[in-house]
Length: 165
Image (tube, rainbow, N blue to C red; front, side, top):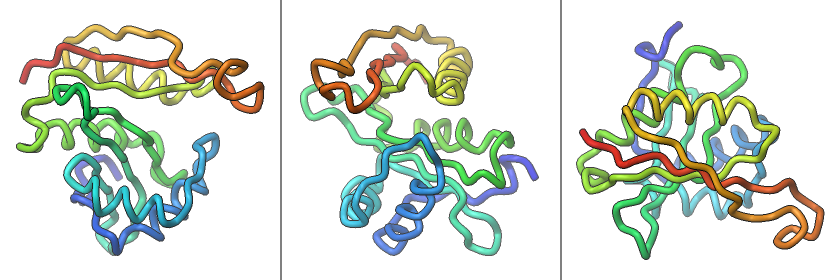
């Protein structure tokens, strides 16, 4: 099974509960409320994407949104891929498909936040930057002590771009 064998779609509110369950099964991702996932799959359907098997089972989800004060920047909130299909290029294919959408055509930059220990996400976004021929810059976005009072690891802001299609 490779990334071409998956079905990629805009999410809908019907996917909200499946997204919630998928994210919960993908540590170290932070889980959100089911209501939040319903909002992600309905309000942000144009800037998010699902990956499903031919039987309809949801095995991947990328949530994102256009930054309100920087409309050329797509912020990727979460990337979740079911353990049973990891290593098959699904995450990168979802991101690539998402970037090709007409609504995202004004996007010149991608941002996301990653904790230092999330090696899979670092590898994914470095690979994506290489595929896009873009630079990857990293700064601290939310500090462990200052923002999380020691209860969550530092989130590093990753910025890729400019992207040219």
